Image 1 (cartoon, one colour):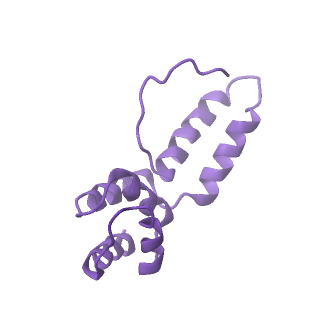
Image 2: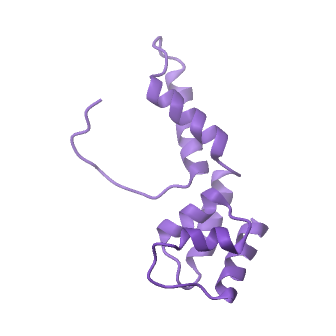
Length: 115
């Protein structure tokens, strides 16, 4: 399939991607052709690595976005990966030009472990 231009762009968590791919799979199940290789691999990847539901993930991204020093890309990564330690969170912030205080890390961990 050749993509000519992008109509819109939106950040999605892996759980939201899984839900969207499942909808596509169900619509295409009625067609006589089998699913393409790339679509099958994408569905398999989303099934293996997504955690929680799309609603839970979106709620977590919104909560994380309310924190200081948080941007939508990092909030989405944190939601997808669900880090369990401060070091794992620091690794996600490695490319940023600032460091997080312990209070910031604790706030992030609190949201992740609650969700």
